[in-house]
Image (cartoon, rainbow over all chains, first blue to last red; front, top):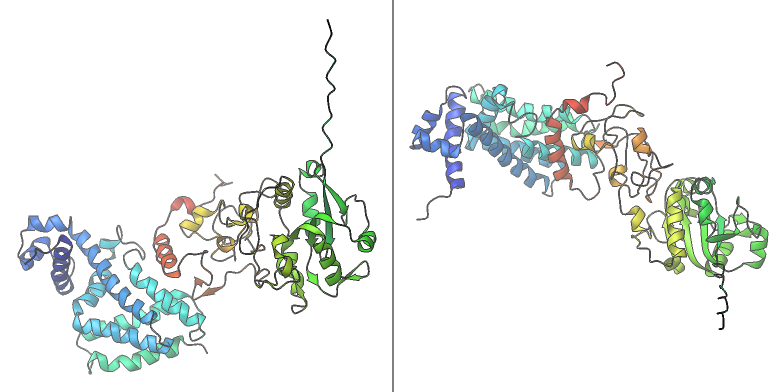
Length: 197
Length: 308
């Protein structure tokens, strides 16, 4: 059996680190605890990531790329804007259910510890793959006349803040129903809030 | 011993000047005035002579031109075309075609002559350029297209016309683009050579006209990133250009000129509706988002601070 490449090994480390970071938080998670979970020496872990901050940065790039690729596929599909909203909501909640550590990391590590990321991930640099696709979604929605023209961040905040908030509430076990049962209502709310009047 | 007889020096024959007719359609005279601003006009007039020009000394009045319909080397047409527009009591469809058939080269001078321009706005169905009607090559000189050189602009830079005339005088080949504009002049974008390019790269906007700082593309309607022209290479009056002086390029060399709301950037959800020429939207947005994440302090201040 072929030995995994360095890139494959890095992804395997990131997957495990993601679980730890999203459960324990950024400061509680240490390089030794990550190394222990993976079953490698701390010294060897530093061969892959030169610091915990660099690992944290690569994780957010990794997550932004996953989200970006999914939204790109939706953007390039033959759907109406309303159907695209449904698809994005469905995709986001599915990832939150199947790989909760991904969204948890985004909400509880990336957004909650800005001081960790401000040097290497200022502004939109590390989440560019995801934000760019959202820009394209909104731009095309306005261009075809389905969405109301407005400031990008007003619309972006409404859409992603809503989804992030629902996943956060779900993580706190407050919701009375499974998250996916809210999909249609939430997508409809987003559409009615953003559509042309 | 015979002394050699002195050589009789032969005087070079006087070079033949190219014969030019300058005909006006529906025009504001803008290109004529621009032409008069060419500092090399004096030496240019040593190579050409005007059979007819509306302002400069010439051998024939327009009425005489209409009567004789003389042959020429270059026919320059300034202004928009309308078939029933009359000059010297003759309809333009007849006058233009008669002179076009009797000339070797035709210069479509300015945006009105080239694509319809400003005057087309008044009666869109009846007014066009002489070869193009906006983007469509359906003007009256379609059958003579190979003779036509397009010099679009509102107005054209005087150097652009003297360049073309000089190339014709020297018998050199002029490489042309899809609208038959010389690539030497229109291969560039107005964006090329703009002093604000660093602001464009780092996405630092200009809030006002007339300032030295900031890019005019994001808010002020600048069309430089998708307009062909050498305005920032061959400077106006040798010193400046629209964007250098702090006003946006209005895209006057393109068939789409004039657009409405020239001083506002059309956006969809804050994203410019028109991307820099040839740049995919996804690539542009990714780069722009990254660039905007940085704050380059040097680019946020005044270039020349009067208070320091």
